[in-house]
Image (cartoon, rainbow, N blue to C red):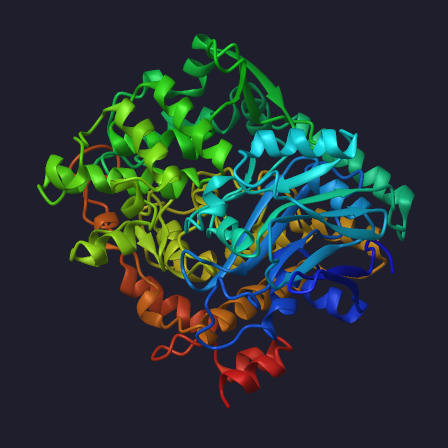
Length: 612
């Protein structure tokens, strides 16, 4: 088998047993790897009504065929399982050094079930696995945890993915962190890991995979690096990181402010340029990446010598969404989230919702125990601390906006979430194709599972092969089919695994995959694999109770603005949803993929289960 190790490590924490799961080439051709392969492996373990935190609820680390190769921008991995935040399919990805170390340990991934009797960590080294006591690590933040494990194993040549206090406390939007401050951030899968008493997964090794055509892989790697280095977006990412988008995004009406009620705000203090001018900033990159979009701030304070710089989503969530334009407080809030493993998007949206409720008198100084005013950066930092420590009003905020609304008796339409996961920092009012992607995405509102703003801004990877063309960004007619096709393609990135910022064309992706594996995959095949991926994840969520009623955007994210470039823009969700369902061949009444569509995609077992 080329391009793969051909096996997963299996771990049963109930009795501390490990084993191996062989992978057939037929399965890999159909599901490739990453989160897509994880969905196939997880499917048989999901029961109707299953609690995500049930000991038998599976938790999967996975890489793809691109991971560990010379191709740039491929050092990524996926974690997958039932989301503690949404109760449906959940997945998250991260980059860094950990993915290469995982692949080099001799496995394409790790399939974990059960619950350890006490805190443990998993150590995988060149095809062997050991479950070790982690009682001394429980309660430590993620930076301390990684340092202590390196000292214990007497090596820095380790990939370490771990949880902090948020995961230990089973906070519903806790993360899994790796390589210092890299986050597999969404869906609350840190709580799934914490529920298993699994503090960390540590991987290392030098077991390489065989390549079908090593010379061709080397040639394609050079072409891809040249493409990346010459791309103006890559240059901007290298200079300013993802935060380079902040001022442009506000001009386009794409940055939500004041809890999705505004789109115009004083932007100058929170841009990538402002970060560069006001702080000592250095770059860091995932293994093998020529860009280096990661930021590291040096000499931030007397207490903190070096701190991970915030990315765009984090700055927008703790910044304009809360009407906070104090970069110092945003950096400190980000550091708290990283240290303890907390999704900055869900945390920021939940805090902004609290400010919205405070302004309306629903939360008061008496029942909240504090003032929660718009624009108060110190309050933002304090609330993050209270969420992590499960103190006072922080306990409510740690549930996410949907549960907050339900507990307070509020209309769920003011909770900025889809399927329970908070809406990210891009506006469906600015990009109607993004609005339908949010409503139908496999894990809830997601700006990466179909980042349609990149299509209509003209910055997407070349997709003319699929007739996905740039159109008027604030038009709903005809968007659904293109959005569905684009979802298919971008979902595949988390199977390969490939960074979402890699601007490789479908033809280039096929050339790389075929050179690695010896297969003969075509661009049309890519779309089919992506469509299969979207549908098997959908079936898992259907199995867990998902219906069409949850394919929607909340009113708070649809009411028209009266300012900025998106003034008066309202996505026609009913029109796009009907067109989307028709293209996908999903049943309008139940929200399930049709039996015929599933069979057509080779998901015969899943079709029989769903329609038995």
